[in-house]
Length: 158
Image 1 (spheres, one colour):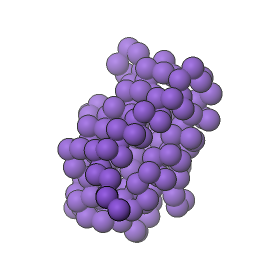
Image 2 (cartoon, helix red, strand yellow; image 1 turned 90 degrees about the vertical axis):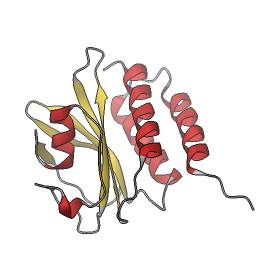
Image 3 (cartoon, one colour; image 1 turned 120 degrees about the vertical axis):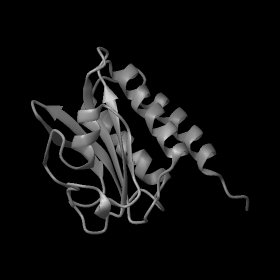
Image 4 (cartoon, one colour; image 1 turned 30 degrees about the vertical axis):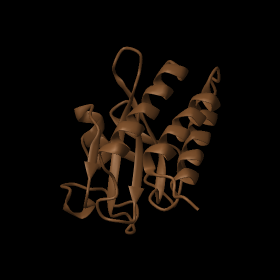
């Protein structure tokens, strides 16, 4: 049996997400299904996948798949808060080496956080993915998770 490479899995995932969210405006439902399909597609590397949404000066927990998570994250705190503050994707190979990391789970070892934008460019929220492995995320993950964030921004028109 041939193994499917990561890029092919992401290509299929992006097509599935686009089809799943097209024309749907139920944000909670969409983000719930997207976190589920992402978690199911990469069970070997996605220990936790979900969304934190901007509310005033903090991020609040949105739909996710995985273990219990932090409810609120201040702007600039931890990987999610820093990604929001800098409006940029962050890949952290070892979360224990990241200044001010917020440990929602002691099992998390590496993380990628990608901002989701409103139509005016402001950050609506972030996609947060944790792995139990060190250095689990690379440029391929970044490229495709940014594509997923763009699909959500375009389809949901935040």
